[in-house]
Amino acid sequence: MNVIFDTQSLYYLPQYIPVFKKLSQKGIKSKFVFYRNSHKHLIQRVIDDYNLDHIWVDDQHQAMDFYEQEKADWVFFANSFSYLERLHKVSKSAQLGHGIGPKSSYYTKSNKAMTVRFVEGAYRLARLESMYPDDKFIDVGFCKLDPIFNNEKIDGSLELGNFSDEKQTLLYAPTFYPSSLELFPKNWPEHFGNYNILIKPHYFSISKERYKKHVELLEHWATYPNVYLAKVEDYSLVPFLDKADLLISDASSALFEFALLNKPVIWCDFLKLRWSYRGIFSYRFKKRMDRDYGEYANLAVHAKKYKGLKKIVEQQLAEPESLANIRLSLSEKLAGKVDGKASQRIVQYLMENN
Image 1 (tube, rainbow, N blue to C red):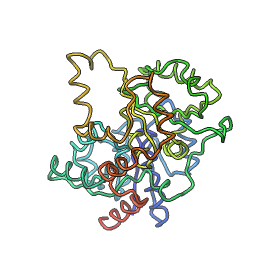
Image 2 (image 1 turned 60 degrees about the vertical axis):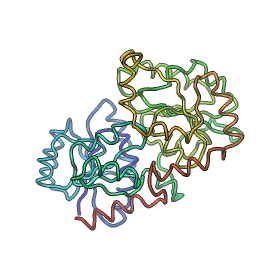
Image 3 (image 1 turned 90 degrees about the horizontal axis):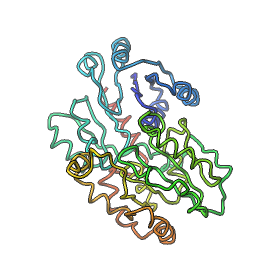
């Protein structure tokens, strides 16, 4: 059996790698397709670290030409792909989403049917099956966190030489849009001087020109001695989730992934919205978010404004179990089984349906 992982963005890798490792353990060969961009040299470092068999392409059309040539048994995607009809003449396709969260795009990316989509939990499975009754969905769980649940060595160790072992560690992981990032004060790390601070922005915040204001703020915050700002090559959120005692985020999949570890989460309700999402256009924001947004919100303590954030952080770190029951009760709905065997179930399916 031969498997290819279509890697249009570097941040798809944390979901792919656990599956890749399970395949390797069974002697099954995998190849990765990477798309050229301005961070090619950094991506190459990651490729070298894992010793990945790979090729580079410019776009999906070039990728499709390669897939026709390779005729792999399975090609994995983390999002949609424009040439599925051509692909399905030579290979089967598998979709493996790169995150869980409250955005409605989780469901709409199944608009174009793949051979199979691996999903997280019975609830999401039922919703997708009702929306796309002719398509194939398999509940396997959320394999991105398998390394943590299995107490494995976490890939991508962080250089935290400036951090104090005496201090608790906060993780701030905002999404790119809608984001709380621009509403944090320029000197906010001073307000949290008694903590180590990890900052893990979304890949788009540091790679796309339209978010250059994000980069300016992030680089300023990185000058504080108690701050570690993720570099582009820190593509995986998993090491950050593993190190942190508490997460601060907004409508990001990071928030839900951290909650699965049953550690305290603070959800920032203050967001920088474009004018086209405000006032009479606020329906656009609501459309962007999933219908379960309100229920998911219960697993976190909410900060209505930055002004109240520090007090909430102190309270949650003093009482980390205060929302434990809610986090645990929602974990099945968010991610299905959290037993560290999601990647194993994926590989088993591939082998049984080869």
